[in-house]
Length: 547
Image (cartoon, rainbow, N blue to C red):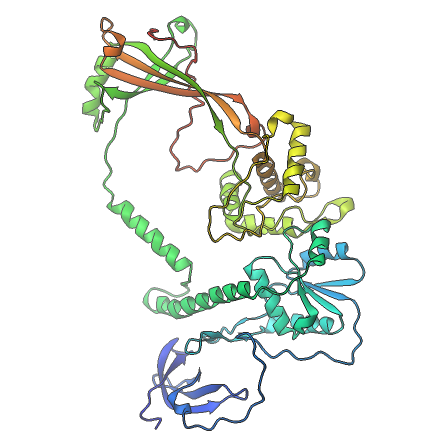
């Protein structure tokens, strides 16, 4: 019968799916179906998991029924039942975090770290059964076996186990993998999460434990499986068709396509030449001043209509006329405008601003932020987490943090520098994890100046950026006086409003600094320059005044 059925499996040597020669069905020790054979091309042994038509008439051996479990899990064994347990075990993902948390919990707790993930998909094969609900096959890597054994032994001796990994999807998945790999009884395990590593936050989290959120675990597993399906299938194709050591991925392949499409658009774009005319103008009363103060006005209309100038030849006749023309003020409009502070940092905005202001690469920014989050020794207080969790897409802020920032601003700048009500920032992303906060200092009173002797140069620069941005986000808007003047040019004997050329000058002057007294966001280099503050248009211009 096997001669009539053609099966395919993944060949590790060919690095692609091949026909299986001489397929032999079997049942694994746990009762799951599998097929063994050889690659029809190179002869390498091929092992394929999952049910095939060859299993239809193959008697299935009796196996011990396993309780219903999450896909990819192993049966949890009971710890040594007769062993006497004492104390509570806390598991985090990094040694630095373990050190900081340990000092807050006291002698009844032992804190250890998993040093990241403890299980992953096998590297030697796809490890995803695409024919049976995309079931993942996890394995503890060799370099993590001693870590898992240590956690397992400690858990067996403890009355309770607290999984205190990070509060995002990845942290939730790490907690679940630790629970499974170390074979910890679920009834003894509790999940605790916090946004900052400070004593109040830690103690509050341990007062409100919960179960592992399997929805978040599922989300992380889905992303991991997609990463494997895309990368494992496409990367070998790149090696053969393009060159070795290239990689494909769920995110990077899409990003590369977007870059390529945009580059093609740029290459296919036909630029249009565009010219404009500006006039540098000064008041009559300032003619004798050296240097003479002036402001700029841009040609806005010609003979009542917007004008398009596409070449030097089109511009030259107008310039020749304007050089001999009289310029008089028409309408002058005075007003005010407010500029609100930027929201506190999310992960992406922190990376962007650190790149623009500090010239940090993304990897450096996140490495330094991780250090600030997990804890820095600041003298008498010991190791302290200085910022909230740095992987977040939320701009939400706790009311306690807002109140502390407002108190600081009032004490150092005055009551005028805080708005009547604390500002509310809304997260734009629909997929944002709103349980998280924005990135902020854990205590505003720990100013950059107060910590300069405990942080490295780059740690201090990044901390100052985060601290300044957060405190500024709680301050009052900056207020500008604005002026906009329509200026008409033409022959002096023609009424001002009847002249063919109408220029417009706009400018603004800072009246109240507000948040700008502390921090100003860096504008992206590709954003159009619409800053009016450098164009000092006199607010005292009067109608018909000659310039």
